[in-house]
Length: 193
Image (cartoon, rainbow, N blue to C red; front, side, top):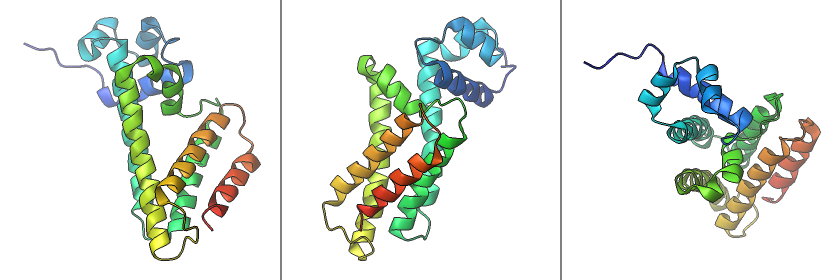
């Protein structure tokens, strides 16, 4: 008969995200996980198998949460430029609220782990494609209704905006100067005029 878990898996995953996000994959030991998650080593192994599997689940959980937030904004009835502004402000808001300067968990994983781990790379590439696609759809809609004056290739513009987002996420590792981020948002939106 299988034992019932005496912990909330969603809460443990949330803690795992925060621990991996703060320390990185390589610097997080199994003992860090046992201590930080508040579960026994045997429960950790029984539930997740190993550190890598837990890291994958943490990445997927983080991505799912962020995708949900983005979808709400993209599917709102706002204008295209206002939608893009809201997306950028949401991203910057999360970065500025982080006093630990962790940056973005996905970007950190992309730099540290993805070059050597095909499974992590696939998760990040899929997430990146979804974000790029969201920007593309908003930009295309804005071009179609003449709200976005830049008639350049909507895909190229979406890639530019998405690359800006990645840059913001890296910049947040060294500063939380709101003016820096506001300048980047203003300049990014000016490209769409």
